[in-house]
Image (tube, rainbow over all chains, first blue to last red; front, side, top):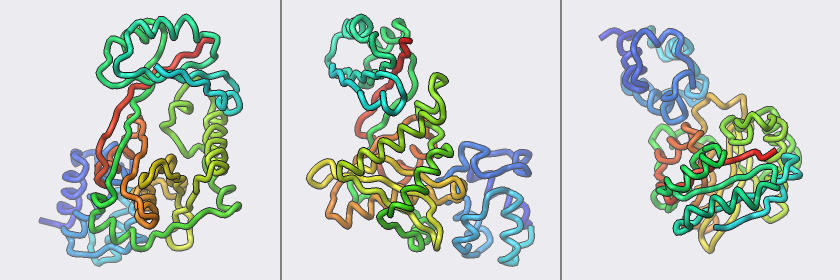
Amino acid sequence: MTNLEKYNAAFISSFQLSETQLPTLTYQSVQSWDSVGHMGLMAVLEDSFDIMLDTDDIIDFSSYEKGKEILKKYNVVI
Amino acid sequence: MKIIDAFWEKRNLGVSCTEIMIEKDDHVSCVDKISSTLEASDYLVVKVPIGRFDINESLTQNGFVFVEGSINFHLNVKDAILSPLQQRLNNVVTYSEMTESDLIQLFNEIEAGMFKTDRILLDSCFTEKQAATRYVNWIKDEIGKAAQVYKIVYKEDSIGFFAFKKVGDDVYYPFLAGLYEKFANSGLGFATLRKPIEESIKRGGRMISTYVSTNNHPVLRAHTQQGFSINELQYVFVKHTK
């Protein structure tokens, strides 16, 4: 599984979305990406990439695209 | 049926308001009484216990509009839940009682439209300013009655607040809470529930009792995720008579 596939799978399983919805996805743009959903997504990403996100990065993770930039800090290139 | 002259809404909203609490065993004819005797009031709010479809139907026939469900959540503080990730974040989030300048910041945030699912804000007969004024006055009134208001802090930033009071021997009621606009999309919303739990525990409290509107889906989810359970549900209907 590539990093992109793992990244997409985290969003799809956390928010019950289709892949076509992901590029424009932002926090609260769908009902399932709320505070509870956000923590679920962060936990799945930490497990998938075997990383521990800094609290600032958890807070800044506001969109699908922003998340790609954040993961670069952890040597995860999407 | 209990009838309450909500005189404070005249100051808050500029309208006379009567609140009616329907009780479980009230006869459906009580709706006729509401309609015939209380229409001198500008704004009527009726709260109906679940399962009274006869009253719901009669209210609708009499021009009342359903606006929300009001859920009373209870939590025994020993049953409070945080996920491991929330626990990690919670460890770097603190809270403290507000100063005067903190309260000014809070009131500014409220006036900027902090509460987006409020039934007053969503009501086309009221304005954003009226909705905000009502919240600000509510907090000021409660402070005058010995409630406390706390700021929630992440690193150096105030991210939100909770307002809190004791309502029983070991029962606390966080009656209002929220995140400030800058942090609305941060995932830190859990802290607005968690910090009142911590303050209750600190004071020797056993139970939290609070109310959430069914219009506020994220906050409903947050309560169930942190271990709250539904104690009571009421339907809320309103009518503008003028």
